[in-house]
Length: 166
Image (cartoon, rainbow, N blue to C red):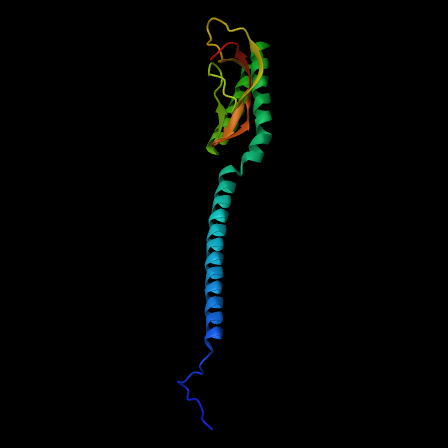
């Protein structure tokens, strides 16, 4: 009886050997696909985390913006009615503080008055015949200010636009 030594391997039939080689190739491809999928997941996760940090303050900002509008109206109303200068100044300081806080988070007011109408960040409430001092297609009055968070519109400006071709 002959024994195979430790360095000798039993010979496999050619058919079995090709089956093993094909299986190894398939497994190597699967491994490559799995590595690529993991790399994609890492990139997507990193992008999602970055966007969450960048745009995370949007829900709070959306809740604060109406308060800013109310404070602005309170100042306008108090000035029109001849209200107390100290109260008006206190409201103005509060409003300025809120605006500064929002700006530090990347939230800015959309400048609309006198600008050409931009449907990506403005909502036309009405159109009026073009006054002489304005260009056709430009915003002649801002009904409600709009705000942006970095490059995203939080609230579109509600505006009145001069009729005519721009």
